Image (cartoon, rainbow, N blue to C red):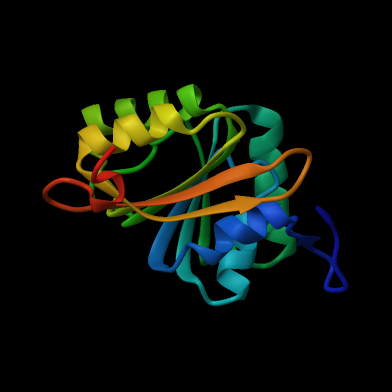
Length: 174
């Protein structure tokens, strides 16, 4: 990320690609760090309201400060917690997880499902092989709806999954 003319961060190609796959009334960004993605989602009209979840105190404070500087505290709620734990079942229809390993993301999603947090849409950008996320999604009732590659330090996979019944046509014949 680099600074933009309006005083906030500019998204790198990886987060721009993630942003392009998110449109929802409300959305939660898990492990948001500086809150760059949810800030831009609100600014560009991709979401009306967002929840930012951070586990560690440093990134949590970074996110709180970024939301305060942007004067978006009425639309972005910053919460402390592990993964999907700070979310109530049905609270947000859309969730993103970026910049983590696929197994870490899978663990977050499995723990969330155990708490009955089942968002309608998931956008994930793992920093490694997305196979564990594909396998989880297939078993958890999600279909792959979009997949992109984003350039950066290396090439990042970005996947959008949506809850759907039946077998996922994206994997027919595999």
